[in-house]
Image (cartoon, rainbow, N blue to C red; front, side, top):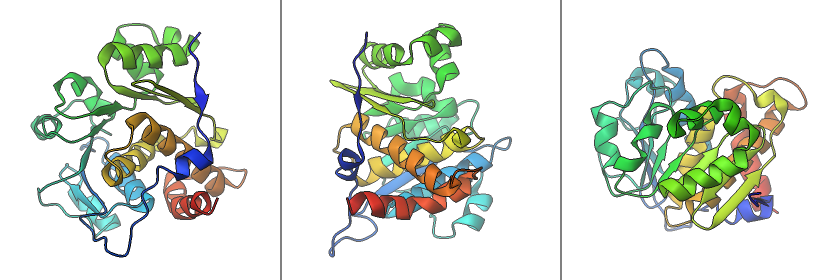
Amino acid sequence: MTSFTAWTPDAAAARIAVPGEHDDKYSRGVLGVITGSAMYPGAAVLGVEAAAHTGVGLSRYLGEARELVLQRRPEVVTADGRVQAWLLGSGMEAPDERVRAAVRQEVPVVLDGGAIGLHASAAGPVVITPHHGELATLLGVSRAEVSADPAGFARRTADELGITVLLKGHTTYAAGPGVSLTVTHAPTWLATAGAGDALAGILGALVATNPSAPLAELAATAALLHGLAAERASGGGPLTILGLCAALPATIAGLLAG
């Protein structure tokens, strides 16, 4: 039996980087983003939107959905440059050369969707964000096996691959070196398209703004923010992912206020 500790709002609040009076857009954290594709361009929009509402100094978007991302978030920079973290792979069926080059940089990387399989190529710390089916594919087991013991498989993957794992589900598991955390703050209405893209964006922002923190704790914080913002956006009924993103600032303010 794998023992996981419930991640609390108070613990999450301590992992949110609050800017000081001398911070600027660069010191607050720069997130590089290569997500989306011709088939799934919305994944890029949702990830960038979630990162913006979580709090990041600057986002550099270098993926295929440039025009859609800029229409939604005109402050996004589309020129290459230095970053504190990368968010890669959401809405992509397979990594392209831009993703492969980014993962070789010595900064933390959040690997989602089609980039999950690049974990062994990363030069910096890695957190992957699979759902049960994606983790099953990565490990060469059945989805039913993962779903029967998600905590055990999250812990096993972290230990065997030497990475941090955020295994998504109604109960989410974050496992990293010496850390096993669980998050259950999510309404059932959150089972909707785009939810994972937003979670990846939240996590990318947290990593870019707090790159020295344990990745498992940032992953659990992202899952908790994701769930609490969904509750706020839902109000007990259906929600949209853009609505979830819009609820993030008030959700974060509530956590910081204690």
